[in-house]
Length: 486
Image (tube, rainbow, N blue to C red; front, side, top):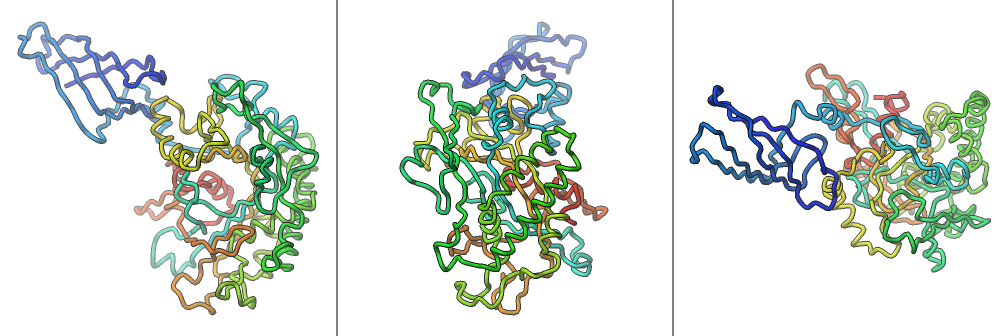
C-alpha cells in the first residue's frame, strides 16, 4: 500500500519541463516495522484540477528492517493513469467536476484573487462605453410534442447549430452579427475591411497592450485595434440580398428593443450595477440607424427566414414566415430577449496580427496542453472572472451580446421539400448566398443539460461545455431563466 503526500511547490513554474515532487512512501505490509521514508516522484507535465496524469513514476523505497533486495524501482507506462488524491486539495477536485457560470460583474474584484488593475481593459471599457463590442445573436430552438416525447422518453428540446468554423468548440450558433467590433489597425490601413463594415467616426483605437494576454516580449512594439461598425446600407449593394420584408421586421425589433431598454433603465434608475450600466451602454448603440442592418444580418444568418426554393430562386415561401404570432417582435423582445456579457478564454500570449492562419489554428489545438503545462486555469482569468467560451485571438469576443430566442416548434413547413433534412434551415454568412449545413442538437449533447434516465428528468449540466458548444453557458442561463422551455 502506498500513501503519497505531494508538495505543490513550483507546480506553476512554466520553465520546468518535468515536475519533481517530494513524496513519502509507507510500506504497510508489515505494520510493526513500517517507517516513512523520503523518495522522489518524477512526473511529466500533467497537473490538472487536483488529479495527475501519471506518465512515468520511479520510486525507491528503503525500509530499515529490509535487506537491499527490497530496494525497488517501478516503472509505469500508461496513456491515462490518474493518481487521485482524495485527501489533498479536496476543494480543487470539487471545482474541477462542477463547472458553472452565471452573469457576472467583470469590473468587480473577486475574493481570494488579485485586485483588478486600474488599466484593465474592462475598466477602460466601462469608463468609455464606446469601446465595447456589441453583437446580435438569433437562437432558434424547438420542442417536440408530448406524443413524440412520450414515445422517445428522452428530453427533446433542441438548438439549431452549425459545426464551429474556428476550431474552438464542436458547435456554434453561427448567427452572431456584430453591430460594432475591433479590427487590427494594420488591416484597416490595407483597406482589408470585412464586407458591409466601415471605420467608426471619429476614429477610435485601442492599444493591444491593454489586454492582459499581451506578450511581455512586445512591450516596446505594441499594435493597435480600430473600431469598425456595420454600415447603414450594408444590404443595399447586392440586389440578391435586398429583402424589404426582413428589413421591416428588423426595424420592428429595434423599436421594441429600444422601448424595452428604456423601461429597464427607468425601473433601475437608482441601480449602478454592472448589468444596469450594460443596459444603458447598449441603448446608446441601439439608437443608431445602422442597428437595423446588424439585426437583419443576424436574422439572415439564422437561415430561418431564407426562401425555401432551390438556390433561392423561388421567393414564394420562407422556412419560417415572418407573420407568425409567436415571432411577433413585441413578444420576442418582452419574453425571449436577454443580454449577457461574454468573457472569453483568450490565447496567452496574444498572437501578433501577422501570425499566419496555420499558426493560429495550431495555437487553438495545443492550448489545453499548454494550459496544463503552465498551470493556467482553463475556467477563470487571474482575477477570478469566469470564462464563458474559448476564443480565437479576436479581441472583439469580449462582447455585450443581445440574444433573441425564437421558439420555432412546428413552425417550419416541409410541404415544398423532398429531402430528409427539409426542416433544417441553412446557415448563411450575412452577405453571401452559400448555404452551410446546420443540425438540430439536443441540450444534452450540447452539455447544457444532463438527463437522468432513472427518473426521466433533466437538470442543468455541471460538465464544462466550452469545448462542445460556444454558447453552452449562455444557453444554460436561458434555460435557468425559463426563456428556453424544455
